[in-house]
Amino acid sequence: MKVDPKKPQKSLAVYYLIAMIVLMLLNALVFPTLMAPHVQEVGYSDFLNMIDQKTVEEVAMESDKIIFTAKNENGEKAIYKTGLWPDDNLVDRLHTSGAKFTAAIPTQDSPLLSFLTGWVFPLLFFILIGQLLGRMMAKRMGGNAMQFGKSNAKIYVESQTGKTFADVAGQDEAKEALTEIVDFLHNPAKYKEIGAALPKGALLVGPPGTGKTLLAKAVAGEAKVPFFSISGSEFVEMFVGMGAAKVRDLFKQAAEKAPCIVFIDEIDTIGKKRDGVNGMGGNDEREQTLNQLLTEMDGFDGAKGVVILAATNRPESLDKALLRPGRFDRRIPVELPDLQGRVAILKVHAKDVKMDDDVDFETIGRATSGASGAELANIINEAALRAVRMGRASVTQTDLEESVETVIAGYQRKGAVISEKEKKIIAYHEIGHALVAAKLKDAAPVHKITIIPRTSGALGYTMQIEEEEHVLMSREDMLNRLAILTGGRAAEEVVFNSITSGASNDIEKATSIARAMITRYGMSKQFGMVALETVNNPYLSADTSLACSQDTSARVDAEVQQTIEAAHNKAVAILTENRALLDKLSAYLLEKETITGAEFMEIMQQEDA
Ligand code: ADP
Ligand code: MG
Ligand code: ZN
Image (cartoon, rainbow, N blue to C red):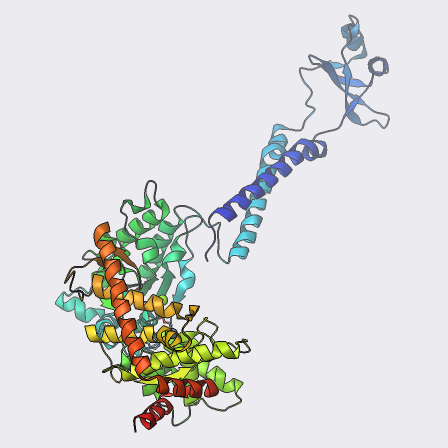
């Protein structure tokens, strides 16, 4: 339930305004005529006549009029009023006719009735409208907006999440850390006997899509306990104070249902640092919610069997108070999967999909270095969709490879019109990358080259696959990468003696690598091991900030430029030297549009022989 906090409040005010106006109109026009007794106005002469006829019963003199009761033609008592006249005989006349003088004749009903009509009915009406509106709004927003001070955390209880550790592939360390929690929830008495208190909270930390939410659900599934799940953003409510109320309510319910798990996803939305970054007046509501969360975490007894799990991909932005002992003091890293992990994740998701027998997950795992679990799950699904589109009964290796590119490089752009001339340039560009890669020592082998454009904007694509997983990159590896990245543009220069815009992505990547070499990896002779740039968030790439003087920054720029230029010169040299091979390979790619690493190597070897 994510609602723009301003909009509903405004329309709520409008609704109330309308209700008020309607109410006032009713009060002024409808109720009095409906409820008050009818007073008939008569002329003074008629009044005198009625006195003479002795039908007048009671008379009350007011400051501006005379109110009297009399029998009408049908012999019923009615109330009349008439104006005042300077009439000295009136008292005598009335006296002789036998009328009664009274202090006041109520032209309105009994005080009780007027109280009812004036106050109680309108109020009831008001409440009714309010409730109707509340219900209407609640329906519109899918929650109960008018329930002040009471949250709807209840609806987040899932007794059975249906997930177990078997659904989470890889992440063995995270699973191990969580197994203890599962054991505790199974058997709190065992821990109580020894007097061991388990951490109240564990924080799952890792980049998006690595399975943090999945792991939390698996813990609940393994422990077979109720699972309260709420996302940090759901605490931020349209009414100030609702977030804190929700937290209070959530923990109250959790205590009733213990042993159980409370899972707060994306906790960074409420748990952000409370330093002055937000400036004056910051986000009070968020702060209140966070304070309430801290209070609740401190307040409850850990031995009761309520375990709090939280997940975030911005651990560095969390308020330190959250990480203090007795709160989220256990931190469980959930990292991007390695090769083994990727293969395992692919297999888990392929379990429910009909796969060809000869499908090789290993190759796919190698081609997807850096992909998250969510992306891998998506790759399997895209492959299955492609198989259906192709009218096949099972998923083939080609489907999977195609799907890797779909997920990683965007959908294949069908029917995009590219002229022959442009296609030729693109073919040379891609072969430029591949040939430089092939001629460099220790560069990863080329797996596939294609000039089929993608919707992501890439016009071609050269896929290299490392033979084994690397956790370290040497300076040579990085210089190789730079030469390969500049190889595309270099081929355009060598062959066409002109350059195109097609290298923009390569240039961006090359720049960031060259920059990182100098500012973060200490690979520059000029600066040595000095951190000139710091990474703000290890899980969100490219989120860095400069930590050096302006003068140094200018020198860094100059060195970045030199580094890339050297790489570019190397690429040009390689391509000029192997011009015949470049032409032959490009012509082949132009004809085939997609060639495999094996085909590529075959042509290379023919030429060498
Ligand atoms: P996070 O919360 O870390 O952003 P999720 O738990 O929401 O990521 O993961 C999204 C989806 O990706 C999961 O529902 C699952 O299908 C898939 N996934 C991610 N990691 C794994 C894993 N380790 N094993 C199996 N599936 C995974
Ligand atoms: Mg998540
Ligand atoms: Zn390129």
